[in-house]
Image: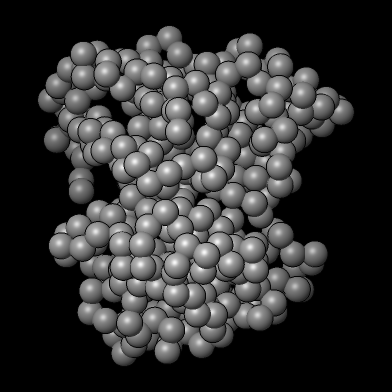
Length: 338
């Protein structure tokens, strides 16, 4: 695919060489993400961050990634703070805000809305999540995390064994991740969910068409016995018609240290797109896993900076200039912890 000047709306346009190239650039961003070096390659550039749905990690991660490349961020959060609350169309909003920005990241609760916005935008648009559809940058950072976690064990992504657990119907992160996995070979995927929250049939078929082995199950313990990755998701209560309906499924699949020790292989990696639901009625990933060295959820968030920095550099076509606009820093080590 052509990165420079392109929208990043879906996993669809990505081929395996595109993903591998993106990950190579992400590796190069590490000293900047860790503040060992500073670059001003995007000095003067403006990111328009438009988040019409609650977000912490994605919004701050995108903003931090842009800042770390030397750019500035202008944010809109929530419909009530935007002209859309006054009846403005996505078309008009896109035409206006793309005049103020060099690139835009958008999250919206309605499927297809980001693509509609991008069609009217005069600058590249990155999808920060649109309804139950896709979350492409989350999938990319998830796959980058899988790559790094397995590399430490002398493994690659091909022949990965992964269990995806929880709300697979409404969880857009797993939808995008499945589409990315179709670019690789001989993947074993176990989809663990209640019947009512199963992965959409079209995505299951796409995995099978790619030659992957797919098993659907409602049994957590037996499904996580022989996998490299357990990827847990919360119940997406905001997608349900009522709180009562969401409560029917909350807490159905809980992974804690006891279950992990009894049923997982010793080096099974635990992932989650966050936020994990820490309420007593939920706890899909229990707090007693916090000291488990295979809990990768915070390494995922760190990796999100690298991947999003790489995407900005590629889409704005400044990859070759990052180092030439850089300098070393000496304040980094004093107060920062690993």
